[in-house]
Amino acid sequence: MTSPIANWSPENQERANKILATYPEKRSAIMPLLYLASLEHNHASNEAMCQVAELIGITPSQVRSVSTFYTMFKQEPVGKYLVSVCTSISCHLLGGNEVFDSVSDAAGVGHNQTTEDGQISVEHVECIGACGGAPAVQVNYELIEGVTPDKARALVEWLTQTTPAVVLADEMQQLFGGQRSFDWGPAEHAGAIAPVPAFGPYGSAGGDQ
Image (cartoon, rainbow, N blue to C red; front, top):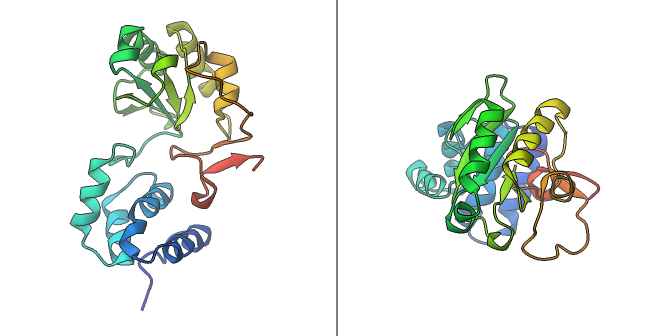
């Protein structure tokens, strides 16, 4: 019988099998597998959800119920860099909307839109847990705290002009950040290579690991 993920890259097929082997109940692997599917398809596509459903033995509608509940599983393709601007209460009060406007203006696209070259997607997001460092921004879920409108514009220009293979929170914080919510501690040497959280088992992390 042909595997439902036979058309995935060999690397992602191997990752999927390792993830499945981790969980006594296959359906518990749904969220890690959706991240892998997002890397393979550039979003949680209908095809991807059907593949995950067959792999873990549940219905596509059950997979869809998870995929559509969590906003980090994108229902449409996104750019190489997903720029997420928090506009929840703490960030809003400290200029989050102005930061978003600068990101949007610099990229030339609005909420849930992607630039024509497929490089940058922009979105408003709810609280990302950095209220003490508001306004907060993420690029491919790598955090930057204390961002100003001018620094937000510079961030987009940097992404556009340098097209980094890996986006790293510590580097972006140094270049574009300000007040942090707390001391981050030892520097991280691995960052995100795609609009999915940087995590070795997903193949979504790059840099020194």
